Image 1 (cartoon, rainbow, N blue to C red):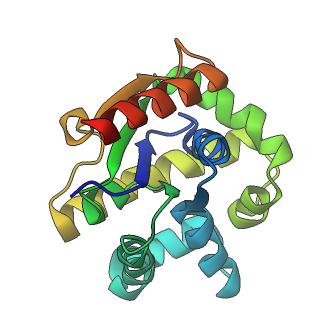
Image 2: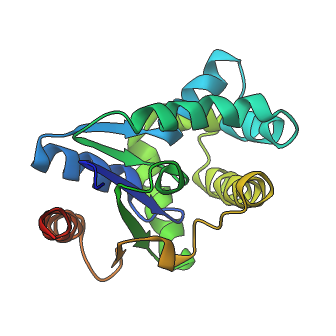
Length: 188
């Protein structure tokens, strides 16, 4: 049974958070970011996001907290979730993948860093290049963990109902595409 839940995944800098917030606003849905949740857990433990990510490689409780939060979201309605694994935990959601070449992602990340205080705190760096390298390292670590834990590859595009190129479409266009395709998906 289809749920009124949209899960949004994508690579580094693809616009997961901005897109999810925009889609949620346009539909009047709630928004949840597992990345923000993970960063907050790290800050509460006094760890940077990379440090908590490293700890998660050997301490399954770290991922279990985020995974349980996502599994609990399965019982919600009218929510947009940006997460690398929500599509897996909520298979009856409308699953979206945002695609973006790595070289373009880097520029976007460096530009967005200037306005994201949580990200600056959790990365423990004001140097944008350093932040990008840490994010890339974290992404690779996450991919390995997700495979080891769940045998999933969240970059495999056939896992999704919709793939949107965020290089060819601006944020407003991406939001409009997702909302339109979500409504079509709900009706069919």
